[in-house]
Length: 457
Length: 124
Image (tube, rainbow over all chains, first blue to last red; front, top):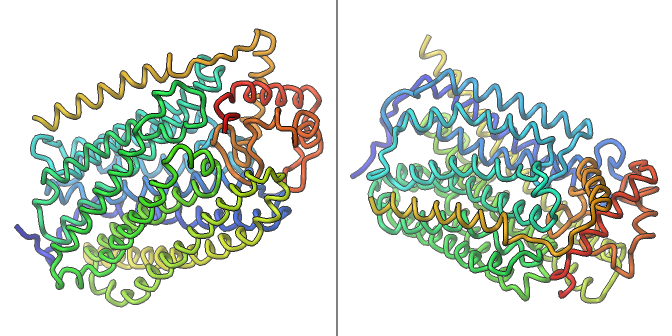
């Protein structure tokens, strides 16, 4: 079975999908900028200390890049849903409401950080009432997803399962991450920290489900092979991922004195998931004809780089999952290297593959003119990310050595300065590479949007 | 149908497992008395209000710009007086939050409580 590369169907909701794409990439752009500022605050202790301290730059950076991941996936879904079902979006007005609430919530969160109003919890550092609004903003999206798709799970391809699971668990885990508001959880530090790791670990799994689903969908469309996403292997991978989402957070809690059974085999599941995903992508690359590779060259390259990052992250995951080694690596930049490899290397590459796939669908002629610069952006991003990743590992190893030598924190920070410079400067180049991808994508989306408006007039 | 059943089984296991984690899996042996608990709660609220998590870690949760604080209270290189000095005036990287004496005392009591629970951490 094959899909037609040239036939294009348009829907009224494409406009809202394009708006979501631009919003998602704006999150990433500002998130990266804040990340670079945060990097300079490692090198220059007084840099913006009284105007925009690290107490503000870190939560801003974390909030914006996390929001890029799930908004990027939502943007893709608003574009793909009508195409999968061959009917218009169930509630187009709802998608607009979603966009408006999300922008409003984001403005309020950013404002609260600038005003020094915090919730003070890892990753969700904004006041808790804004978390409720974040959940609310998802409701129109959920209605559109289920009522447009009307999924029949018996025959649905794996990406439909993946997206549905991502949505369900986002609601569960975001709610769970606010259990600390109940005294039963808040007053017991062991319970509070364990539940926090549990909720956040699974929440990352829920975004991964959304992003991997998107990756699977575009792989199907690019290769024209509709069997792979219905194969037993794909579903084996999905259920492994689901188990991973539910139980893999345990490796974060080796140092928390919770019951020993809480810290069990989950990390092995996580590693297997990455291995299987890598396997599927490699298999998919084999099924792509040269013509299709050339036609979809940018999404193809992005997916291939994601494949490379899966392998690197897998090696790192194996190393840091060994409990005896985890005792040293936990709480160092080695954990950050793993997180960056996953969020930029895997998720961001998959999401940009989706963004550029949509752009090609919207206007191949415009895209051709920007093919070279986009390819350069992809290369710069990945090369610089590799340097950034190595710098994080170096910083982490130095911290381990410092711990073993019983050195003070001040001595550690002095010794780490060259590594801080290394990760900040390579971070700037990552920013430059992604800046090219973002600006090119936004300009192409705006052009195709203008053409669509003229045509419809 | 197999896929749906597999999902239901996994999801049910997840719910049961969550129940265990919320209860017997996370019981603490360190239980402050009522008066101490009030101060600990106040200290924790301040820790959250000033977003200390952006620079410091407790049990691995938090940023790396500042030192890990899980066992700071019993650390011979740091300890209560060292922490008090930093909370009073800030540091090279740490802003001065202008805490009053009661607030400083509450934060230190909270960190003392965290330190007391960090049994497995100290085995490292």
